[in-house]
Image (cartoon, rainbow, N blue to C red; front, side, top):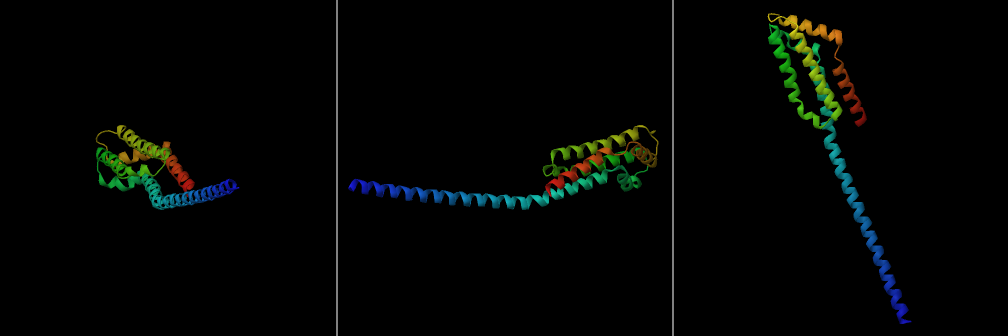
Length: 172
């Protein structure tokens, strides 16, 4: 009888010990999960404004390098086609370099489209410049660029802007 009583006590103690152990484990996991959730929430609250700003800045960059906007800002600053050509290329590259860090916050596809748009605008400007004589005026280059834009448009800028807008809609 003593053996049965002893076994009953030992089994009871084991059951209580296991119950306490599993309760403590559940409590620790719950606290760990809550801490992880709080960290994710804090991270999200910090990163979201930075990502939104990056998308805004890249949209602004694309609008600024659109040939008609670019020409409106720079055409009065140069008198010859070569001067305007250099000014336009420098303006595009400086703004791109200024916004280079934004690639961290936007999608890879969107960043590649922004880069392609930049390269297409530079190619349009270079092509217009090559088609002019060396003594051409800045106005002649501006007209030539606008003629090319009217003929072929700026589809890569439009595509990049659309992709940025789609990505931002998915995020928000």
